[in-house]
Length: 280
Image (cartoon, rainbow, N blue to C red; front, side):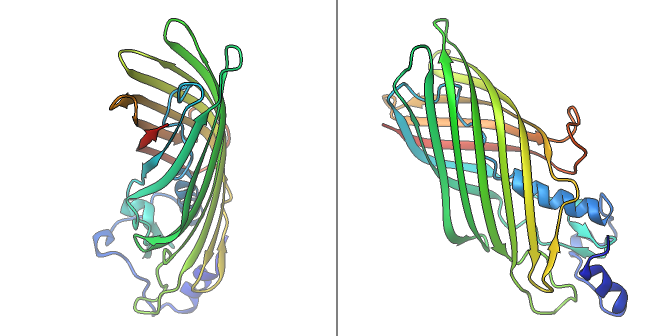
């Protein structure tokens, strides 16, 4: 599928698109459509609302207000090159995505602890991008007498970004802001274990992502022909310090489209995330 940008390339062969000097002589990992699909899916996956807590995040009747930070891995030249490797996109703007959060575990209902959480990033400009990120989760955990915890959770995120990402087609032309929107939702099964004040946990689930991208230079709409639908996993640990007032958590997070392949798509991420909160 030829985009408007591609048509401009053939119409003006004397014009040279911008290529990052570090990427000169390298080639893109996928064809143009596959590369576009990967980029769209990648940045939706970078802001998913992964657990960053065990199956029972707090003692019943308690919660936490804090800040979670998701690392956004920088993309290589092979992933940033487009238009048959004649142009690079400015995707490595923000190294992390910070998000204030609030979680609360309701009083115990029989053997179950029901909890909920929200996260929100207001429209402020950070790292040259203006983002709005809204996230939420609901879940249920079952603490067992031997320290084992089991649980399940549903989560969803809607994020919008305004920034100059698709660099000017002709080097030296004025830059215009682009608009990106990504939404994700997923369901996780979780297990954890309390051991000496530390709760290691693991979560395995199914994740869906949808995206929309508007290039400000020419109002071209970038659509993913292979929306992400795949596995998401978290392996982490949670602990309380300072008389159980400081809540800390860290995890290694992956979203992958081929273990096993639920749906043919282009998208994957391997990253780290952390959260610090005040327990109340």
